[in-house]
Image (cartoon, rainbow, N blue to C red; front, side, top):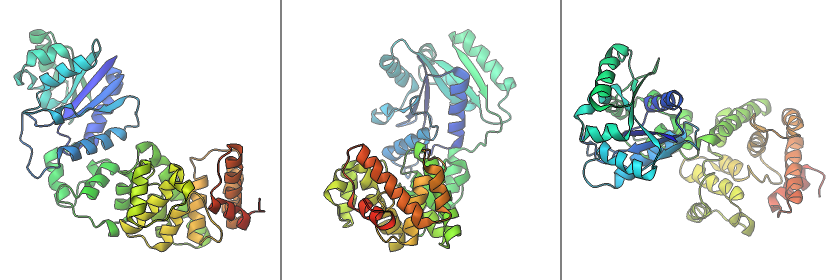
Length: 397
């Protein structure tokens, strides 16, 4: 197996890191890519106001997830638990023990590549792993790479690969931290990483979570879920906006409801229960035992009490999974948008989409009917709100 080792402070991880990671995976044919946040980098001292190690680990995990390569990417926290400086030689020695017999490749930028012979125990580094350097600016050309590549091969018998990454937007982490403190720099970050920074108020940011712009709300919400869920959330938002325009609802409100509707999707059952208890959300026995139902309840609670949404949006999120009898227009629109957004693919979805724009109550009735059929076929208990929605909008059981 061929494994890429990608270390760094990741303070914060930005789009340049992800572009380099993608290029290395493709150029080297990596079977695994391991991100390793540094504990105490030997070549620099972290600012005392930097995020904690746990926060840098969380940001690195969020960034790695944005690559949408879950079977290939991993975040390894070995350096964060190590005392003293985070020497690459020690990390590669641990990696060789963890993945014995596998081919290791150390990924680095041009500046690191040109000085690797001056690192702590370079002989060990270059005997344990090949070196893959990526050019991050237009100046990082073959003219710069070739002499160092030849030197490392001759002096250390090193395996060396160099990659150019055309059109890569470059920003130093130092400059990016300065920009964030000034309320700028978001364009250099994955949306989910920027959302985490806003949520944790890192780098001098001070967002009021109850008064976020639509774009900032997206970022924070995206930071709370796995990247594989984002296509659905984005599809639901756009569908909810179209339905709002068709049926005379407020587009901004429907976008906010859709952005937040799955924000707790990947919490554990206990985390759902804790949120509901904290904010006084009543749960029936079926909801307590079913995480698919719980995420609507805990998500509604965070929407209202953390993100400042009013009762209309709260109830739209609360019932977006089960529906209920006598729904408000916003509740109907979110329920249907979630049910038939463009990523959904099931035999009846075409008819449901037609009804959504011609007979919204008929669409709700059809959605409830499909849910009833599914529960009966799977011999699962039917939620009372879904039963009542079917009886109210459909033909009754």
